Length: 480
Image (cartoon, rainbow, N blue to C red):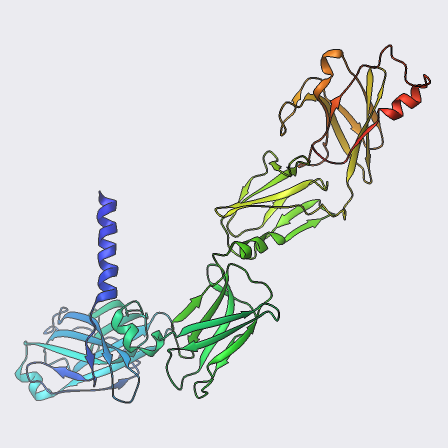
């Protein structure tokens, strides 16, 4: 229940921020209550930094309260601006000549200070009375984080009010409507695939103000893709052409006014296209020195990556055990990988699955397995262009993706062979010889199936055993 109440409170707070009406003024200024004459002037704040001991006749709570709000200042013929409206209450005393109000931007560390002075005669007449001071001439930016302080003049130690304040951002309807920094503009675009150019036309932004446009890849922030273009405010033609290398789901158009803290608008036209998603799987790299296979996404994507073995019979790619990886934006890497043409990478998202086989074009050395039947024995040979270790077993291939062992494992090196005695129980259409590399972490198992062993007591042609062996030799280059 507590979580629900917290969520409701946050929703109310954000709703209030977005929908709060901000008062508009034509002039900023200073005012003091009780008919006290006061005037203001800019102050460096340096001379009032050092504090004095509090006189015995002065209470440490002479400053009663401080309230901060935002105003929109609009002067005809000029853009509107945001100003702080600061109200402070203090008790007048003959030891106090005025107030100093300072604002510090916690974003830029820039400060503004104003000194407010009271007429001496009036101050003495109203000694002990509360007076409210209102000052509204400190200009601020959209969504600025401000630290406001109020001190007496002279500055008495421990007599000070301070408050942090967040200026409304462009989600507020009044700020969005009146403040130029929130006029982010509107995009129309056209893609020229032949020339790899995106033409962008911008409208609905402040006249006579320069406007920046760029392409970027959207991760946590939008990262640059080439240089940005400038649309000059004085030019009537509000269009630019931007070159791209690939149309990716995270390729976005971003634009903003050439003013400090300007709101930025983004348009990502390719983020929902299945065609554009498929391009993400192309960035696969194999390092022969370390036998490492790696894929690094060009865009953040929620994807599950597996190594898989491509089945010859139906082009299905069966997952290799313990190879599943999930990563939205980090590199996926597999160490000690077999470079067989049918070892592939499978990428699965909500939109579907894609299989990429980086070794399918024969650019890397592959190994082969072959068998030769002599009498009741089956010889299994392995050939490889590189040093390799293999394991062999007889299995029952009742399922396409698995092979249940019906015999013992045999180890063999490339260039050597191993002899397997085949009993009548082990022979049949479902029996397979399965071989795979054991000197790597990820290998595809190859199978030779449909083993027939009815050689004993038979004659083969002219009775030449060599001819019979040649006749019954099988070579496998890929999976069933």
